[in-house]
Amino acid sequence: MSTQRRSYGFGTPDPSQMSFPQIPPHSGKLTTISEDGKSHRIPPRLTSIRIWVFVIFSSHVGEYHHLSYPNSNLIPKDYLNTTEDTPPPFDFCPIYGPGDVLAQKYGAHTLLKSKLHLGSGARVQKVIRKALSGLPVTISVLGGSISACHGAGNDPISPACYPSRFFQWWNEVFPHPASELTNGAVRRTNSAYFSFCHSHHIPDQSDLVILDFDTDDPNEPEWMEYFELLVRSILIRPDSPAVVILGHFSPQLQTAHGFTGPEILHTVVAQYYDVPHISIKPALYSQRLASPGSIDQYFVDPILANPAGHELIADILISYFQSQICIGWASATGTGFEVPTFPMGQSRGPPDSKGLLAGVGIRKGSPMEGGGLEKDQREDDNSKEAPFTSEFLPFRVPPVKMNMRPHELADFREVKPWCVSANDLINPLPPSLFYGSGWHSYHPPKSATAGTNMHYWYSTLPTSRLRVPMKMSSGDVAVYYWREEEGMESLSGVKCWVDDNVGGAVEIWNQDGSASGPTLKMIDHFVAAGSHFVQCELLGEEGRGVTPFKILGIFST
Image 1 (tube, helix red, strand yellow):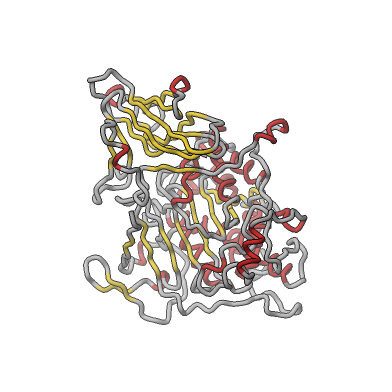
Image 2 (cartoon, rainbow, N blue to C red):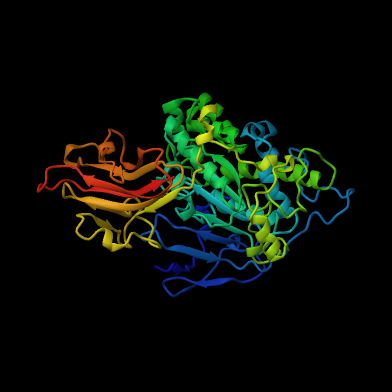
C-alpha cells in the first residue's frame, strides 16, 4: 500500500486564547487554502518552520500529514568560520550571565536543578557542532499525551506546545531551510509501545530524538526495561542520533508516588547510556510541597500541561541546549575545553554507526552522501569493522543491557525491534491471514474522536485463532492489547504462544483492575533468531460468543 499524504492549511488562531512568547513578524505575506476552500493567512509565528507530523491519533493512523511552511528566507550561518578572538555570537553566552534571559526569568538555581543527569553530552555536542557549521538538523519527538499537545492546542504542531516552541527557537539560533521537526507522539501511549514501534513514528534519518515519558510510564520495574529498550534501539540505529530525555511533572503522580516517580527509573537508564535527562520537576516540586495550588497555573488537569506549562517545558529544554551551545562553541573555537575533541574531519565513524554526521548527505543544503568518499572506498569501509579508539568512546553504546551479569555476556544478542501493529496502514497484515480465522481487523471512521479511534484486531468467537508472522533478534515476544474497564460483562481473554509451543502459552485477560487503556504483555523470551510466527486463540466455550478481545499489535526483538 502506498503512503497517503494530505496537506492542510490553518486559519489564524485567536491570539487571546494563546500564551506564548512573541515571535518577530515575518516580512512576507503567506497564505494557504483550508479544507473549506477559503484563503487564510498563515500566522507569522508558524513561518520559517518545516515540520513532519505522524498523526497517530487521527482516524487513519497509517497516513501522515506533511505541512511545509515557507522557510526560504532562512540563511544558514557557519559560526565556526571565525577567529579565536571573536566573542560568542550568542546573547545567552556565558550561560546564566547577564544576557541569559531564561536565567533572569527562572534563576540559575532552578535551571541547574532541572538537569537531572547531564552525562558527557558527547552525542548532543555532535549535533551542536553540526548546527554550528551551518548544516541542517532533523529533530524528532516521541512521547504520550503531553508531547501530542493534548491540553495545549490538541494539535501536534500547535504553536502553544513545546515541540513547536523549541523548534522555533532552534531556527532563530541556527536558521536553515532544510532543518526539520517530526512530532511522532501518540496520546495515551507509553514507552512500551514505542520501544518496539518507534521506527513507525520518526524518520530513518534523525540527528536528535527527544523522549518524553516521565508522566506516561507506570512506576513499575518492568517499564524501566521497556524504556531501556527504547533508548538502546534508538542509539544503535544506523543514523546514530543523539537522545535527550525530557521530563514533565504531574501533580497526580506526585500524590501517588511522592518523590520517587517513573522519572527515577528513567534517570537510571540515562546514566547507563550516557544520555541527558532534563525535567521541570525540580522547578515545581518544592512549590507544590509548600503550596499545592501554587502550580495550578501550569496545568489543565492533574496531569496535562496547559500552554503556560508547555512554555515552562520548552524553556527548560532550551536552557539546557543553550548551555551546551556555549560550551560547544567555546571548545570548537579553542577557548574552552569542556567538550572532548571530536574526530570531525575523519570519514570513519564509530563501529556501531555510519559516522559522526550520519545521514547528512540526503538532505537539501548538505554535503554529498558519504562525506565525499568514493563509492568503492565507502563499500570497503562498510565491509570491515571500524577500529575502536578512544576518540569514539563517548559515542559507544554499552555492549549489553543494564540487568545482564558477567556470565551472561557471551550469550547476548543485540536488540532489533519488530513491530506488527494494527495501526500500520502502510504495511498492514494481508487479508488472507484473517480469512476463516474468526478474527477481524477494525479501522475507525474518520469521524472518530481521540480515545475511540483505535485500530485493532478482534474476535468474539472462542477457539478462533490468529497467526502472525514475526522476526526475532534477541528473542523477546510481546502482545499489545486494549485493557477494558473492570466488569464481568466485558471480560474476555486469549492465550498466545510462539510457533508450536502450545505448552508454553500465556493467558492474557482484558481486565486486571487497572484503568482502561493500551498495555503490553510479554509471552516469551530467548526465542531463536530468525523467522517465526505467533498464535493467539480466543478463550471460552466454543459456540458461545464473548466480549471482543482487542489486540493492538504483536511485537518482538
